[in-house]
Image 1 (spheres, rainbow, N blue to C red):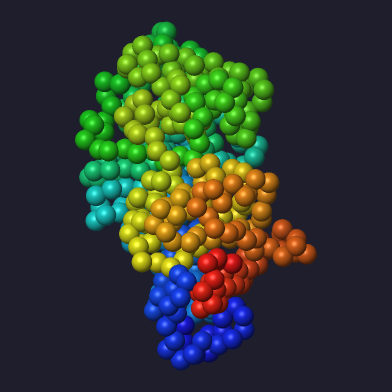
Image 2 (tube, rainbow, N blue to C red; image 1 turned 30 degrees about the vertical axis):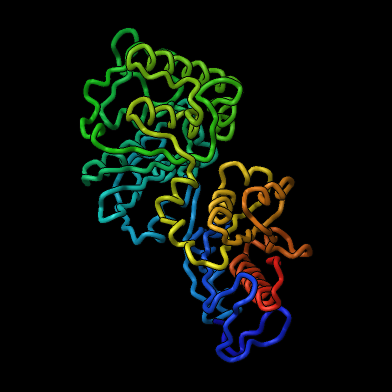
Length: 413
């Protein structure tokens, strides 16, 4: 309940120990905070923390459940560790260019399952701009993290595959687990996507046997196929440093890989939606490890038990850095909104910026969305002040919610 001294949005004060019973309200206001990160500004954990400060200002007695979210990209491990009480494990692995680097994965559920972000070991952020070259970069480090998870004895592995520096079809990952890629003379191909056009033989005889006993799920927010106009090379290659000539070489290599996987492993992954994610790592995880491609946000929602945590809540606040037409297609805000609508919990989205097409989230269960940035403020300043702005926006949402509940209004804001 909102105690005396906590002003509602209209400026009036709640009566001491007043129970809010009309509209959506009940005796104790339960708010679930389920935001994604605000990219280049705050992690989802930091976003939830800032939102919680605002909720407390509006109603000090509110029951707050912070559930940092992600959609399978960067921040997935941190979000799941925070939401489930998992633990970090650190290992030395190889970065996209074969240099040693320390990377983390998480053990959750009493060590029964692991969560891995490929960006930790094979991400674009590990390279300087001048080092970006998908002809050479490899996903070997991601495979080494999977190997470490197998050694920990897990039964389930979630691999988030956003933010890669690679277009190697997951061959580097597979090499770390024992698979060999040979040319016509029986020689090992160099790592990276540039050599795949010479692939003749895939030797999976030494693939780590523990793989078959582990459930591997692949969290992604894209459904691009491996090859073609929407494939890994043409859509994602340029952002990883590929020139137009490199794109064609990578495309030919991935097509060759798909051909050999179908011919020699019986795995037809060429047209599988999502196989092109992370430069074809999606295809590699499916074809070599029998991984299952899933919507990243749906997988995270399941992993953190968001449905149970929303049960009995009166309000859900979610958000992301930029709300636009892409948000409704596989992003966190839309996934949270759909679940909240099913459970009849009003969900509001806060965003750093509102872009074209943002209104599409209203069809995905979000009842209202707000930009935290004042129109007069620059993007740079708003990013620097994001915690303060998020707290203010969350406070405003809760105050309005309480005021409308008390007045019997059948709207949220």
